[in-house]
Image (tube, rainbow, N blue to C red):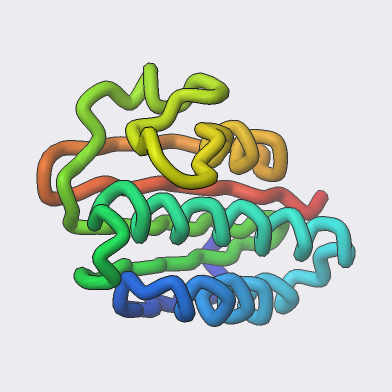
Length: 140
């Protein structure tokens, strides 16, 4: 597939930037005419990924940066969300439903599960200092 367009966004890891990030990605996605449901799916998945960066990678201290890169081809959107925080010790375990490293507050451990439910593909790579979540949503 040939690439139709690309974009990159860098935001501070602050909770008020989560809605901005999901809106920007959704606006970029509409170039390939997804359904409203597909746009909402992407917004939900991006919201979960950005929130994971804020809460887990940076410990909720509202510091650090998150990089979001998007690529469009004829029938899909690929979103890569990267943080430069503490990393995920065990990606396989972290992707299991209800697993969380935060014992206080309202964390349910369903972030990756939600991403998987709303995307066609979710891949996670992580080492200390760089975690990348790749989300793919097809329109065809």
